[in-house]
Length: 347
Picture 1 (cartoon, rainbow, N blue to C red):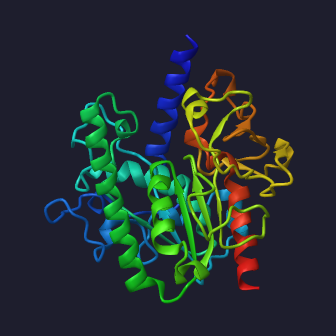
Picture 2: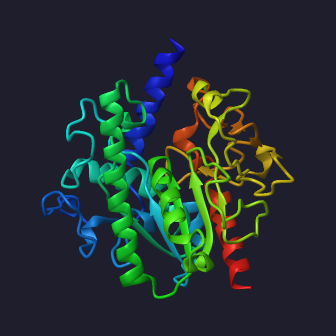
């Protein structure tokens, strides 16, 4: 029965996220009906960006409680790589998403771009490419053949992200400082971006910080970019994966690396535990409702632990996996920390 309730709750979460209406008015369905050249993205065309400063999109949305103090900045850029939204069964388009699918593009924009990328919209210009993301099942191959196909799917997805980032650097960056932000599959790809374009490279000097959330991150993966250990540190990496307190997923127990785990309430390695009173607000099912004190945060072995989130209706929420809300539970805390790091960067 508990499993059924959790399943229904997750369906509700995704449905409401996908159908949520932000406070601003956006382009109609035509914005999601994209024509590709043999399936490939063309990043000179704004339709191939889920978020871009030269168009109005869901990343521009500001939760109603935060609008009074909203002041947008354009001196820093955020390159955001969205998580997996291609989750349909069966895999309608094979191992990689079809960029011409309007429904999937809309789902991406009104869930991850609205609820995650918007965290950064008062800190700088947001660039979030559409890419031929790997299907969710690529993370859970069942056969040797599946493993081979999954590897190909992730490689194709990364090639799109890489192409988008190179286009961004060539046409839009103009020397601006950069924040890398991502969740889940997006973090699978942003780790590679950091390794290929920042680690030991001149671009490292332009990195304000990287928020690489929702995936394991070996602290030894990068050689010249350190782990963030203080809230005002720059040129460093933050990462965490959120689960219910005292729970360690079986796959985490099998990992042979100790992942980076940042506390998104303290941002301080010397303060690994934080009560939910320090949480100024998360954004959950309703975009325009800020939920203060929604969750605590404690650094554990390889993961971030949180008690049962406090929100109306949580009586029916018994899941131990808070992955879908890795960023949403700490929405305002992330938003404020970004400004702290930008301020330190300019000093």
